[in-house]
Length: 241
Length: 254
Image 1 (spheres, rainbow over the protein chains, first blue to last red):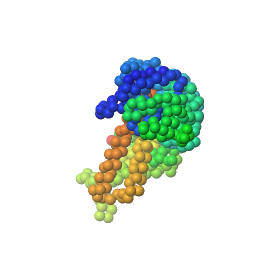
Image 2: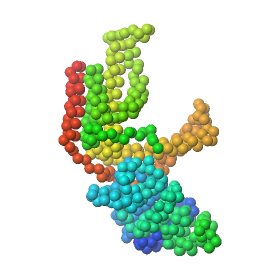
Image 3: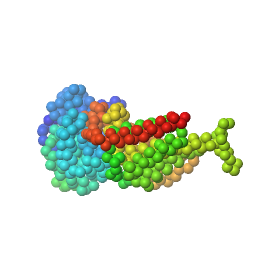
Image 4: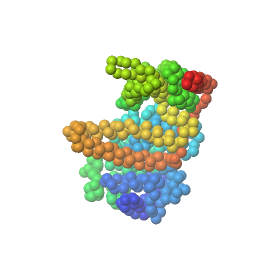
């Protein structure tokens, strides 16, 4: 599903954001991506989604190479990315318009778009929100609306950047249940290590643009030395284990 | 949360039921006719027609009069000098020590009536259809999609920018800042403006990434389907017909 070797990216100002990252994620996996601020998590997502053009020895995402322009154009239909700040992603006048935005760009018929819109809003529990204005939604509703906008494109891979940010405890719990129910390949970048524990089987640790560790979630997140070395903390649930 | 730019929920009315394309075209042509008017009689007739449409649109009168009043006062302040400009051929009246030109007063009346009518039609358009439907109607009328997209994004994000400004102002106040007429105040306002600009630019970049990640290719697309009804054509004909008559009257009186 995702196969990368030597994945690197340098910003125009010369900042080396990603350094030779190897990545292998199988279909249906839920993988956590953790690391301190500035580790390169968001940059990695943007490279996988084809928004930024990375350098790599090998790079395949859902059967497409994001470095190739003709294949990069097909990526939106296969890779969905949910950004940190939902307001950056809810750019239409209404929730319905926003959820329909992606399917319309895919060239689907109006009937198909309406059906996808209805399904996606149903999946996230926002049926009836079609005419709502994004500015008037709560943090949790915005997050769900942003997710619906991506799910409406029926991606094979879902990249979620800090999905529990700005959510209250109830919104966070609802999000976890939602993510657990989604049977697609997921990579979740988050400082919320308890969410990673609940949703992800495997975790990757990124620091200063390099992949410094990968392994089973419980094993890695319980490694006190690894966590503290890379600016993280052992989740409370695993402390003492 | 309510917003200063909020419009009242559209009440059922014959104007609200009109296809937005026909409504937008009719009102734009009406406004064009208003722009060309010069005589007091036709200007008043133009205002009367606009008021009839406002009544037909069932706009909440308090909301309508408040917004119209504020806008009219603002514009009229710039025009109040017109009666004070007295030329040789003008008929004048004396009020105390002030000499007023009747032609200037008439000109003030015409401009105020025209402004009032145009503002009324703008408020009618805002209040009788969701703004995004009006934008989509404009796209159907061959307004470039890029322009529509820019206006819609501006409308979507202007509230966030206002909110951000509000947070910055609160942050200034809790650190003891009080606006005065001094260099420190001007510097602070400049820094706030610069901060807002930079944050808006960064947000714009993130929005662009989000749009591209969902396949945006520069084309404006909408799910909305418009359907013309006989009532749309009739309403268009009546509105444009009335505007044409008023304009013809104005041309005949010149």
